[in-house]
Image (cartoon, rainbow, N blue to C red; front, top):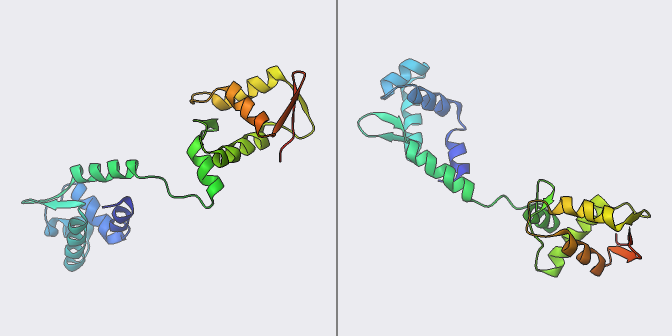
Length: 174
C-alpha cells in the first residue's frame, strides 16, 4: 500500500470514526457501533474496507495493524519526492538542502542551472566584491555539503557567471 492509498482509506469520515473506535479499544462491529453511533451496516462496511486496505487486522478481534502501518511509513519515507513542475526545480531540489549546496552535479547542464541559481541569489549585478567576501558567501553555500567554496568559485568563473580581475569579482552572467 502506498501513502496515497492509506490516506484514501482514512479519507472517509465514517472510516476515520471506525478506526478511532478500534484504536480506543472496540474489538468487534457491535462495539464499534456502540462507540461511534454509526448504523451497523456502515460500521461493517468501514471495517471491511479498512481491513482490505491493510490498516486493520481481524485475528479474533479487531485491532490496528501497527506493524503494517510502520511498513507503510518506511515505504513512504523511502519513496522519492514528487517530481517538480519543471526540470530546473528538480535540479535545485536535488542539489540544495535548506539553502545549502549538498554537492555539485557532474553533468555540466545541471551544474550550470545550479550555478545560475547561486549567482542570482548571491551577487548583485554591477557590484564589485573583494575575494574575501566572495569566499565568505560561497562558504555558506557549501556548509555541510561535499563541495568546497574554492571549487564553487572556480566553476562560477569558468562558466562566466563571475569575472575576476586583481582579486575583485563581479557578476557577469544572467
